[in-house]
Length: 597
Image 1 (spheres, rainbow, N blue to C red):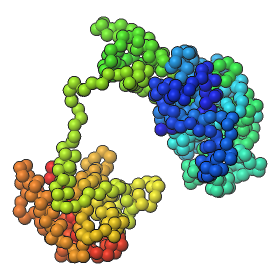
Image 2: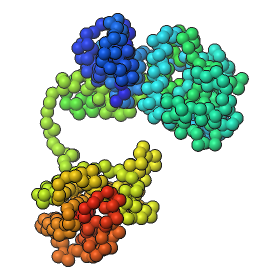
Image 3: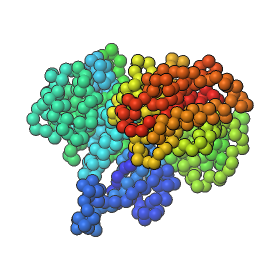
């Protein structure tokens, strides 16, 4: 969940009221957010630099501003800045009504235009733009403006992969603008906070040592063309999603802000643009009014953005109050929705019920369904005020048969003296194949496209490597070591629409000074015995010799059920043990318990 840091005094000034910490915590709880921490700016810096308590005391300042860290819902992008939080709380405590966001009326000749070249489809095909005219910044507002961009980049923009925001001083550039995609050798400009010009490919090399920007280089560095935005004088505004140009950088004196959002996802781009302009149009000369920009594509299609229109939903009253379990009349529901920035009215139906007509503002992109409206009513009503009750009937839910069966298998293996372990579903490619003397033919394992670590490259196709790793890290325990796991593996298969399926397995490992083959054999026979009655009719000759590479030759068997191999067991091959760093002989078994259900 995102956490937003705001100055307490500035927040209270925006709310028009002062609260004690306890009172503000209560207000946050009622609204559905949480006061996560109370700190100061210096304390945050000291924590980041890992300063000691003595240094902290020496650096103390009684007059230092108190910072509130407020945790908000991940889909409430309008609450990622002080302006959004303060506005939402003012409306919630009914100090003001929801504002009406408007797009200024600009003639087709006067409207600024952004021309999109066809090459952008190779890298980032979409762009949306808007202008904040007559905005007034001070230091706090400016910092909040920049911080909102960072929060959006980390959240809905998915670290700039889906959307990247560029903000520019409109008075330093000249329209119309063009959004292009060019080879990096053809792009030259002075980037933000620099004084010399860089070629685009040299710039990316330069930023590989930058702690902040190096995280975004991978988005475009392997592309033959880089996205770039020019003004009418061929001045570079930005190299999205990496850096803006120094020429159009905004500052405290900026009065007109040009905002552009390049994207691979047009819907997300529109949400991000709407969030930026609705939050800070509050400081414009014409409050809550935004100037549009026309985006023209190479195929002749065009659109005017931003789209600040209000969408409408009609929800029956019963669909709102019945799932919550409360009794409210229609006027009370309308009042609660108005407190949540959802302008509401009602209409009568022939059935005697009422329809709630909800106007969803451009700030509330999280409202997609009637259930979202119901959730806002529940929040405004107060979760603590909702009476507790048991469901009238259980039409859905309950434990799945496979999970109940898995628990029974766990209990049986535990009674045999084995200790259960829980391991990762992901493992390295080497552990899943070569360390087990298995070959990867390319049609067995699900491969992770962009693994964060070499330890999590594939989804396991067997529990064997996981138990052997567990044994390796507990090799100093007294013998015998008897461990087991009941867990899922994932196997590729064309019978599922996703191309793969989960499979529940039981695996057990026995380690001692001797191999313990008879121990594992006894466990297999016990499992097959307890599950064969009353619904399983397993034959007595369900064991057949096998030739699996991970086991010692002639010391292994397959487990056959209904003519299909559902498992195997045997003495683990010495080469496998050596690769895992295990000095003692081991025996192992693995069974597909879904086949026994």
